[in-house]
Length: 145
Image 1 (cartoon, helix red, strand yellow):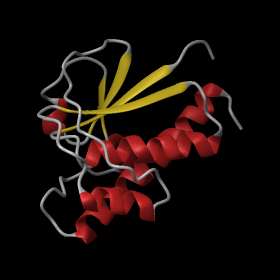
Image 2 (cartoon, rainbow, N blue to C red):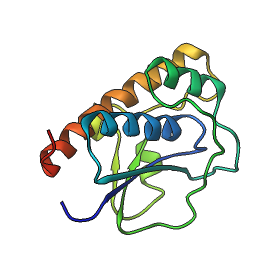
Image 3 (tube, rainbow, N blue to C red):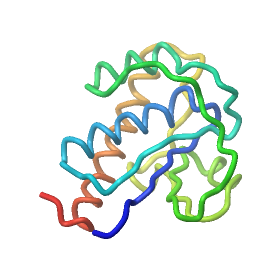
Image 4 (cartoon, rainbow, N blue to C red):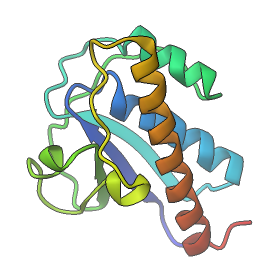
């Protein structure tokens, strides 16, 4: 496969959902031996906040990198990147190559911000399933495994 496929997960603040999706996707592509995908995440209203404690805890439980980081705002839309929005509302705020998480796991990914740990863990499990589905599609197009 020529060049890298660039994926960017999108949510509102980039402290929970898209942050978890980035880390879980990186876990899956590493396990699959995929080296032609570059993964990032952004928030439409991100302001440099640290990722939430519960998001990091859920990532750790699912075996992904759980180190905190500052949220990153989507400043510029790159036409060479495939964006993956957590909800239809987020998808409708951006233009271009955008799909929704529900295309990968059957449901929108509701924001767990401000909720208890169980809400974060359930959110992370949905995201994990979507990332696994996307990894399987990448294996097929990339000829890996």
